[in-house]
Image (cartoon, rainbow, N blue to C red; front, top):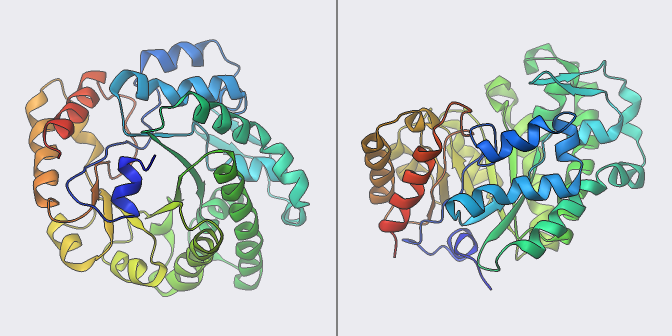
Length: 329
């Protein structure tokens, strides 16, 4: 079955308005907190397939989202390469040993195996009408976390380019295994793209992402590809024409009308997550309906400009989903 999400981002149908939210499974949900409180930490949840599967399905069961995104983390890649990783609650990385970038690919994939097992389990339990999204971080974002370097202006560029190339190999293989396990869509997160100096966007953002997109499109043409170069302002116009993903997630650093006039591919997101932090449903309804109305003549995936905040009332998410479903074909 071709899902509502696939019809939107691959077939370019408009008016379908599929909805899923980044971090739709998370700390704002009591069911998630129950599992969290009975686990040894984030990695225990993400790398225990039964737990990751249950968490992934929670927002589907609670809100009837149109897509599930596997419960995991972009930092599974450095963890699988051998870098120490802890969450307190945010990620804390151990010292980077550059030798890990020569890790054998089979060893790397073996350490990621619980993610693929969780995807297979989720796909078995997920209705065929729902998409299952896999994901990975982009090379720069991963390197920023791994190295502690916060700007491309601080880089040894020869060393950094080698790291970009090696990380791209691991990222592609991680996405491929997620697709083989059951994902029909992937999202590529460049969460720290805003820390790339504008003069470095091509080598550190555009080209690495393009390499990933081209590989997935060549070998898995049926898979939808969403890119999220977060907070790069109007440079997102050049990104979209350079990289050509099937869909691009909007940050809230460019006006919606500007994005509509300057980006000619499917759009996703753009809604400020803070809109949901309210006990009043009217702002949630108003903003959601505004985006749907503005996007009525083009393919659009309802989502946020970033992940759901932990302070978000469950009822706000339910209100957004119900509003979307009232206003779709």
